[in-house]
Length: 93
Image (cartoon, rainbow, N blue to C red):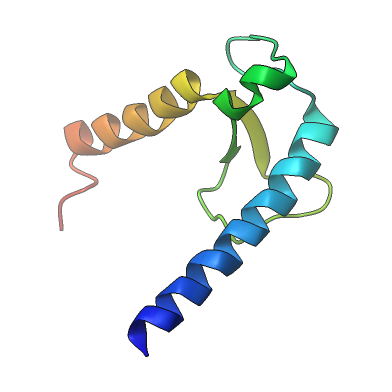
């Protein structure tokens, strides 16, 4: 029962991700919004969609919550905030 529920949730999340990813690529192009690396079809899997507000369920059709980032810039974006929160004590309760 629980396994089926988890599998269904994962499938729904993947469907949402595919939908907003395709829209973001169409709106913002096949280019990293940080380092300006341009992508071709064979390497497009290395271009990800970053949710600016961190909410993966907030996907406005105008793309205002999305930023296309290469995997390297996307990792740096999340690492920077994680490190910054740690150093400023924001991650502590």
